[in-house]
Length: 316
Image (cartoon, rainbow, N blue to C red; front, side, top):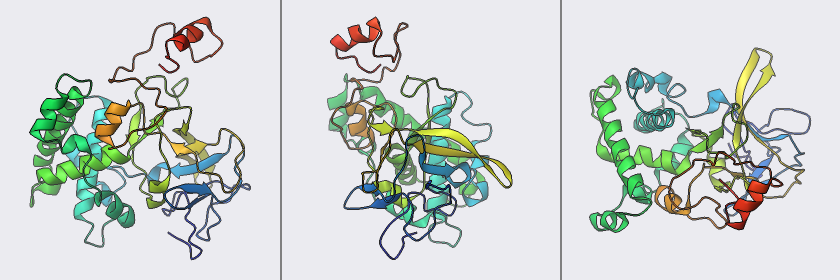
């Protein structure tokens, strides 16, 4: 929801909000923390170290449970049991997007402005490769990525065939590709509260935050430059509420660029196919190996860290 002043709140769905100095909920007057400019987003008020820049209730996320009265959730029950939690989450989001996209023309559609924006974009390159391009990446570090994503499209089609939501009008391959493309481009990685430190190679889960305002916020795969979303909880009059927060790492002044969002651990070659983008100063090497040496420590003063630093291994 945009205010007449042109300022946009960082959390402008009815439930999502930013945090201000006295803990009041963000309103629609442009008094929230984030405003959008020409291709970037800036803070509209001061944010102090350790305070949330963004606070997003779990109920405001785009999930199979939160859209269309949970119409996509029955499609997933008992399915994909042999896949990873990350893949189940990814495919669940894609199915939910397919359901909600079909509802866009009806009064039952949610998150309309965000859906219009993300579905207006072309599919990411990995979903639009020609046969010649597929042959060109054979034997490279991203060849398996194309195979994996192609299998994901097939899994979405397979699950949709047994879903009553699509009984009257089966899900088409173009719909599957478009929905999965949105997940690949726009999902953010959530740092689990059980993770000892961000960016350590532990499995993260993708989430979609259905706010058009956040599409203007920069992203970066470097955990030192971007600030990941974290699981947290706040007390409300009705009890404890689960939220995702992006916490300021330093005192920030009004007018500064909003902290970058973290899409997850991806090399530039992977990001070129998943997002159609590349980033300077990406510490993630080529390929998808995210394992850590047994003696790895994020402490820069340890001998092992200094030794890895000599080989330009400043990130696992």
